[in-house]
Length: 32
Image (cartoon, rainbow, N blue to C red; front, side, top):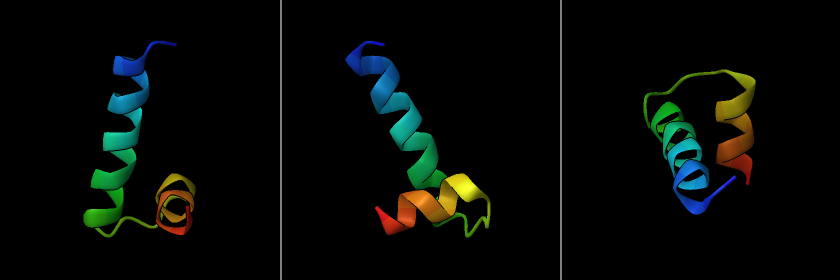
């Protein structure tokens, strides 16, 4: 997995947290 893919996934997780989602991914990202 290249840096662009890693960055894209990280951005999606951050966007989920900002949106207030309660998915496992969002909770993990907010706790990281």
